[in-house]
Length: 487
Image (cartoon, rainbow, N blue to C red; front, side):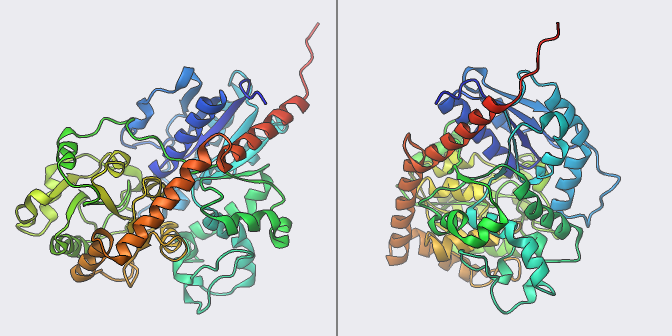
């Protein structure tokens, strides 16, 4: 079926973890299916410059990025306002300009796709947009999606704080969730962000379908539950489209020549990459212990270093990595840089992560387990040390270790206790050394890499799923009433 006459609008909220999958989805729609895509971005006043990915050219000018006027919510938030609450506030502040922007688009959109924190889009796009199908895009895995959708039911059935429970949270047809693994908004039912999180689960059934950045072979049982479990059919009677893995191709960003010259000299699979994503930061104590652990492991490593924080682990969420500065390294133990010498590269603030992970010398990834980072690691066949910090990262870490067997993790959650240098060294060696544990994880990671690539090719499960979505939009377009010409 020809989809080249379609125009799809994708609504994107702030945060690099949300931006990258939206860009990848848009490029895939344009490149593989000839679809015209307009990304409408909610932006926030005072944000740092946008990442380099926004300067990457797109095919045949089919993708355009429309940035709404920055919203200012500084008068309604303070230091205690959590990220989820802030993101919902930003979206609501931008609602009027969002509607106006979509109304002014030419050609008229044939479908609207809303990302995780623009779940209220159907309520904004009423009236003139009633006949346009609307889809919800979850740039995470199916297991997290199931919990988010089921959370209003858990809210009614369970009293007290989830973290105080002694039994796991049962989700129909899915692996149960340990209380300590629930996403941040579920940790405190008295916090405002808990109510915002529940709105996600309540709003999703209002859409015409759900897009998830996963694939059939990665989460077979959960995706099967969505399709076949009778309880799920009564909760969300809409199709679920697994369209992942949504990762950009390596090489779109120009990498650091010094770093890659060093990597080129290292043996294959010999370097551990250490990074906590675009927003994660560690405490001063944990930064010190991590540094000593990396040194004690005697392994080669590349570490993206940020200044430690005495605040929350997500303090850097809206900074998009911040500015590179050698002063960042001053927070490391005295003599650390000299002692690690030629077996380490330290990068202040941010790095070209995908380009690093795709280099043959890299054989392990110590990660915060954000879903983008998780997919970039899996699609390069790299085993991980799971170090979850915030959001849904604890669920992701459990998925990686207990269900997919491609990662190891500290005995106690890093959010609850400082991980000692001895344990850091042990975890690093278990991934990087050629023992039975390391070999099994590496083999499993390579297997998942293959299934992810196969899902995306013509005839693969995710390619079929995206084609089915476009067919539904095309069929809906044919049914839309046309405006008669005025005589």
